[in-house]
Image 1 (cartoon, rainbow, N blue to C red):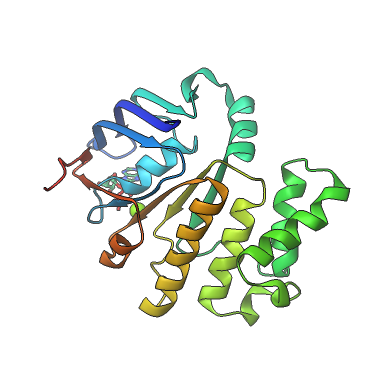
Image 2 (cartoon, rainbow, N blue to C red):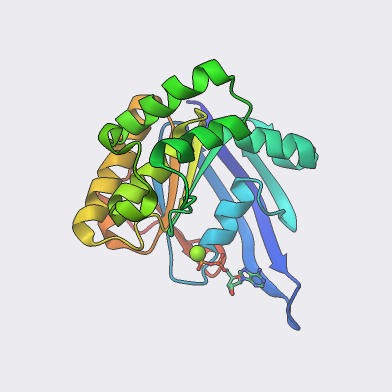
Length: 227
Ligand code: ADP
Ligand code: MG
């Protein structure tokens, strides 16, 4: 079994406020490669903080994170940025697309930023739009698309660099339940076909039917699994 994620004794304390906020208090976690895992827990339980630490967007206060055997704390800022571009795809609740760019341009830009050669970008962007069922929408801008379609563009963009880890934060949070199901089925299909590991933070019970495993975060800790 290839280990995609190995987290030990992870702590994150925010010290910006008058009182320190302990967002993660000793998280231990192992996820095998190719799994689609839901990270559930109520608002404020630490889901976003954990995803941000796993993707190298935030620095833990203590503890270690290994992603496919790479220890994140050993990377300096530049190496971390490079690593993130190559290994991680992010998806957010609010889609995060650039409004003046078409679906195709949104995906292609990500490849450009990651330094993918010009000759390869077009084919890859089209392949990814195809994979999310949006070939015919390549030239449309986000405002011409439904929420579900916009999230598909965001997924195409997230997989364009062929990352091995997708971190999706409340990715179905703004969608009606039927559209949410379509997006969850798409995540499931992508995890299977590309051998990608997907971690989806959510408080929606819909996700349980689609994922391989459900983890519960409670007050900054992984709760013991209910039998
Ligand atoms: P979730 O995504 O599960 O809602 P978060 O990771 O966003 O949880 O938040 C966990 C805890 O950390 C909450 O108490 C939240 O208020 C606090 N928190 C999150 N981000 C910050 C920040 N930048 N500064 C201070 N406290 C924060
Ligand atoms: Mg959150």
